[in-house]
Amino acid sequence: MVSARGRFLGAGYYKVLADALVRLMERPHRLADLGCGEGYFTAAFCDVASEVYGLDISKVAVRAACKQSRGQFVVASTMRLPFLSGMFDAVTVIMAPTSPDIPRILKKGALLCRVSPGERHLFELRELAYSEVRAVKQPPMEIDGLTNVSCEQVRFKILLSSDGLVDLITMTPMQFRTSKEFRERISQLDEFCVTTDFRVDLFRKDS
Ligand SMILES: C[S@@+](CC[C@H](N)C(=O)[O-])C[C@H]1O[C@@H](n2cnc3c(N)ncnc32)[C@H](O)[C@@H]1O
Image (cartoon, rainbow, N blue to C red; front, side, top):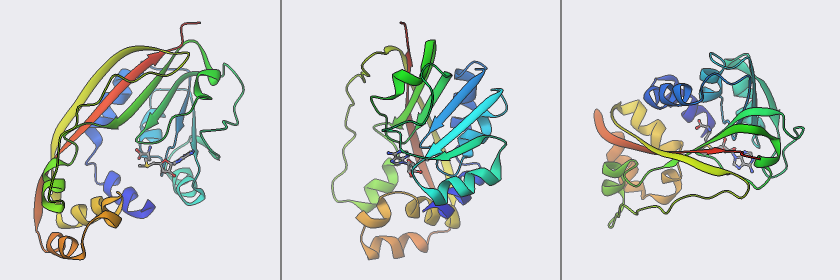
């Protein structure tokens, strides 16, 4: 999954999202990317923040992340963060779990950016894979100790090559939740156009 995700992101399919997040984070001094995976987004934040830390529970992912940016990386769980209180101006959690420990590591006035799949994420692919697919409206998100300041949608279409398509399936739970017939059919397509849909919630620590 880690290598598939590395190849997929390296091909630039999610660059629109990376650019949107970099704009949103407003040049923080010290940023932590929690559940950073192989560090694609962490590397993008290195262009705008002076100190960047990436954290992931997977040793394999962190090893890959160390190779692609000047950030500092740690293998740990977001549930028990190995950081001092009030250390960060910004924290990002991109398609990864949040935890009640996050507000503690934010400075007063600091931002948390949480990215999760939107209701139409990979919709065309899910329609091919499953007999029933619904676009489920998500409720407002709340995190104790933080104020939700905005909720944006980043939605764009990507034209996947056959390799990109296989990598996308391999890096998501679809790898385990789809039939062998579906994966064989997919592997014979030359390209596939799919909607990506991300929900970007921004929270601030007010006190
Ligand atoms: C879908 S991947 C997203 C990776 C990266 N943020 C990105 O968007 O490219 C989810 C990541 O969360 C990590 N993860 C899952 N549970 C975690 C936890 N409790 N603490 C830290 N990382 C975790 C996984 O190892 C995986 O790398």
